[in-house]
Image 1 (cartoon, helix red, strand yellow):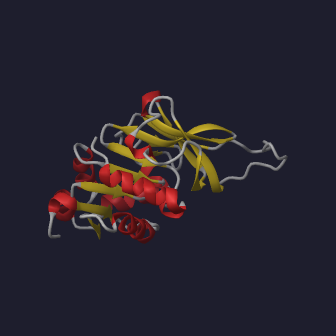
Image 2 (tube, one colour):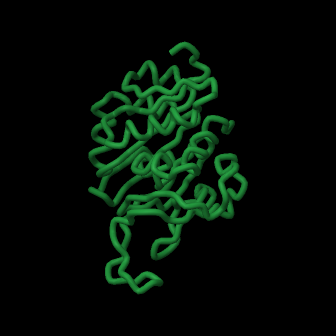
Image 3 (cartoon, one colour):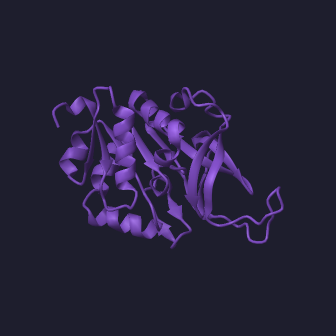
Length: 221
């Protein structure tokens, strides 16, 4: 990497959606000074000044792979001072604990990850709620962060793409940056200081997803 002050690293610890996240970040960084790298090298993570932590699949698998990769400590160190963007299970990993596999996680934001309890309930159109939630849904800005820089240029109620059976439940309202309705409101974006994360997949969410990654490159927490 030629300019450590303009490097964004996607953490490569074996998660399934790594390359699509990297490709979307590269697209977002086009025509900017940013260099986007997919890396499993702890030294490269330490040298970068922004980090994306993706995640896909089971929480226990993601946590195990992060530890086995040797990248757990560099990620925790980065989270102390650098802008870090968690995606999908990468968002859930920022909390303290997940019901999925009774798994302790990184503990960077107070709260838990819970499974949707929607069995037998009907949607407004009369169909049954499905688990996982799979497809497009609206994301609304939270009352705590209606003008957060990460939402710049993204309309309130924009559509983003979701695939998940578990959702984040932060302990404190100020850590919810956005929410989505699926049976009941849940936190679909969370924030704390230099950490921002989404349950939805920006890399699968067309123009508004790319806009979110562009905002991450500009964000100065």
